[in-house]
Length: 136
Image (tube, rainbow, N blue to C red):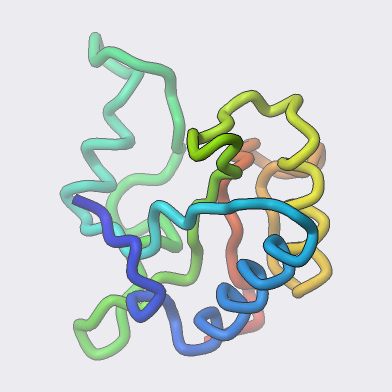
């Protein structure tokens, strides 16, 4: 099962994730970070979804080792991305037209994160926030 632990994020991303959550709360949003680090096996399983007869929609174009969720430092989790969802009435709000997504995207972008929900993202994934490439 993929991690939700902020400690499993890259050291540069951890304080940004905490700021993201705090700013979302300040904006009146309840947000759940539901994925930080993901193993290679979990990544390949997610990649298979929606392909070659596997049920569900395609949710990623990254195989194991290609995802920022698979990043490690000295063989320890150090994910360069996290996935988050707004909660409305305690339940995940997956409708991408809900205004909370745009608020979350703005907050993440203001913190310097790449938000894959923006219209110019190469593959739109509304929950995905990632360190820019300049971070080691």
